[in-house]
Image 1: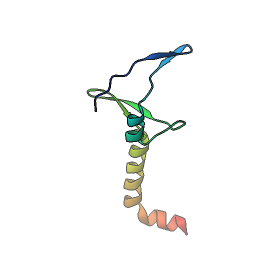
Image 2: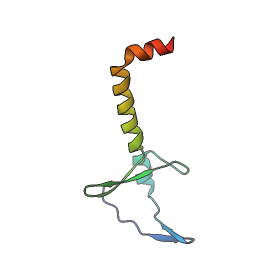
Image 3: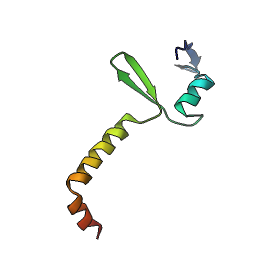
Length: 75
């Protein structure tokens, strides 16, 4: 998908309006949070929080490595 979006003035700020098709592909709507991250080829707009994915991967590694300790703490 290749879309050209116009930057518009919103008060003292600037913004863009995301077309309906883009919102549907991101599976977001009014009130939802989206994440803008830097990518090698520019900027990336996603619905998923990249920090959350990293945190979950770390948590899974800890749970796998220390499962006996976690099992004892759960008792």
